[in-house]
Amino acid sequence: MMTATSMDTVARRRMAGDGEADLAATAEPGAEAGAETGGLMSGVQAAGALGLSRSEFARAVQLGIVRAGPPAPGGGVRFPRVELDRIRSAGDCPDTLRERVRTAAGAQASAAVMGIGPSRFTRLARCGRVTPVGYRINRYRAVVWLYLTAELRDFATREPGMLRGSAPPGDRELMEAKADLRPRKWRERHVGLLLKRATGPWERAAVLASVLPEEEVRAATPDPAERIVLAALAPPPPYGHPQVPAAAAVAARLLRAEPPDEIHWYRAGLDLALTGARGQSNSTGDRGPT
Image 1: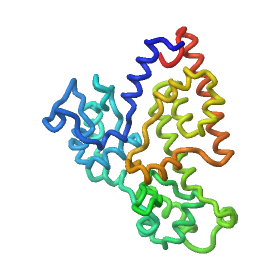
Image 2: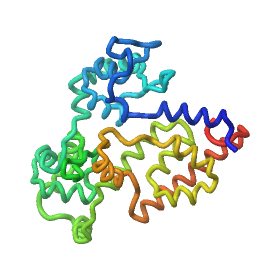
Image 3: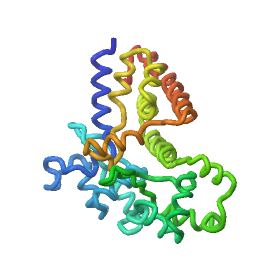
Image 4: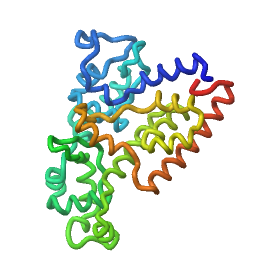
């Protein structure tokens, strides 16, 4: 059985790990009044200090540009003043920082950034040449992919031959197969960013488990107590994930690996992470993160 200490640790880490999904949320009590604790600032305060909107700040945190500090006693995400000073001293505020997190939504806007037509951009995106950084669900319940404008400009400069002429053979094969690599490429990026922020093997295992079908997670963790740990440490939905049930159901499909080879890749990573997590727990004589 999992000890009370382990479960308490899980709960505290889960509360501390609510990531960018909470950064643009309503300010916590006292935040608007400028409340600070020990040089730590709320997400709302930190965004204001950097001259960013809440959505821009959330994207900066997602991309690892701004690093969170230790959580507040209630579990809220906090940002050290020294971290904000570091960013300001690097000359990243606010215009250059805003440019680093600026996004284009959909094929029309993204194509305009690259100076090409929407149909060519869609082909490049579906073939995995450019990777989305986020998504939103429009009123028609269609996925609108978001791209970093800096990355679009970089691709246009780096690969001018891809902006004109016929598609290369590999892309033509993907087009004939009606492939769409956008969800997979987004998951790859999303998981990679989450793994960089994970603080231990159980957190890494939880990230990998979060993109796998339930039956794969059950097969990897026959011990129900381990599944409780993984569920408690699971990352929250990414910033921009819709709250309306109908739209959330569409977006939820983006969070799970689908092609067999993709599932196999994440399953192998989960097995490896669990081996490390179990080894850590055995060394402490406890189950779960300690």
